[in-house]
Length: 272
Length: 289
Image (cartoon, rainbow over all chains, first blue to last red; front, side, top):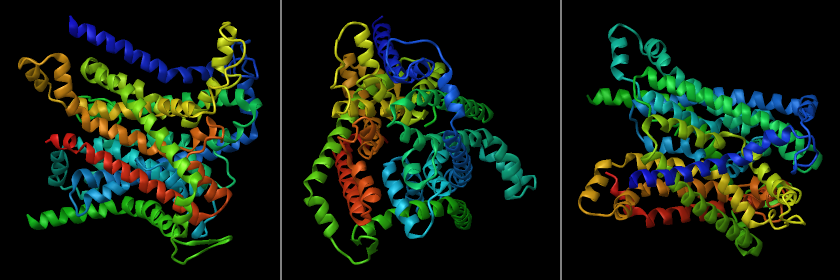
């Protein structure tokens, strides 16, 4: 009885915690559909004009297109590099493995401002013009550790005897990888792509430093925060962005679970 | 055997080469470059490559830098304390109360806000706490207050609040992982040996969970001290933290050596504090076999 009592106390706390986590996000759709120029109670009439204003905004379209280009490129690059790192770290032991993996995973704990300024200094010194290309370089770097973390779980759950069986049946190292390993880790790869895409799409600091005059969605939003009359449209945009992130996340979770099922392990849950 | 091992190492190195090369080019070299820049001299349009300690002298002699660094440390410390204390019961609930088949769902619910746009979440707090914001207008329409409360936004408390909200999921995950690793029979043994529930928690569960708590502390403390968005948006530019100072030197004032010296100095302080924290907790980290 006391166990149940303690459990329910914790449950109330955990639910309250979730409410605290989600309460601000819940305001997005409420005020995005509210017919008032200030974000305040009491609510006015229902309107879709902020969404219309958002869709008709040309600067926003440019920013969106830039962000999608950057996120797609960074996701593909980070996942490709992540496949190499995850395969190497889960299957082989090699000299200086700890420091090497440490360096690759470092952006996960380094403040982004440090990554941003150091890359900026080097790129300017090397005479590279700032553009969405330089943002892709930066985003690939910070997405790579996420991809490696997800892919390492996928590669670690592989049964090496499957691979050995392929060798015994006359497959080369590459064909065994393509025909046996790749299909088994495919859900992990999809999950890594989606996560990297989400991280890049929402990233602000690196884009702020490295994009030059090119806007991305977060830097566009940041520039609009100063203008009170843009706020309702930003609420509409935020609603769309959060919805997109949640869809991408659900897809990533779906692929992760399929990967767990495919390699026949029990689900321990979670991304990290 | 030795050759098989050697072949494996060669294969491993060949595989790790592309991501390693990328990390060297895009991370190691840039970090070493700002380290080098911090010892160079700024000559308005160019950077003069002469060794000097003047940047560091200028940075540490500057009372504004010291005040901003202290504020950043205080904010990051408060945020870390709040997030970890608030997160621990949630992690405990996830690990000990939630049935195994429901854990993935709970973890997903907790991680979703973390993956949604950080900028949007910070901006939402501004909307909530602002002069004509959600809290003020809500309280006014309920008749609780006549005039908007001015103390909600643009202060250290609101920065701490916003950052704590933003970094909440970071703190839960490492603690949850550490709690999951605890062998449940140890807890039963504690109870069987006559310890009360509270003493079992204090003497068995908590020490075994400490590696997760330590990880949570570092994972929250290090990024929050370098946060740029929250002091800018929530502090309204009036309460700068180190990231704002680095940004101003690097872009607005365009003194890259001085900006680099500020970045390196802050990093050094954060690293020293993190190592000190690890050292203080070393007996908990050693427990895990």
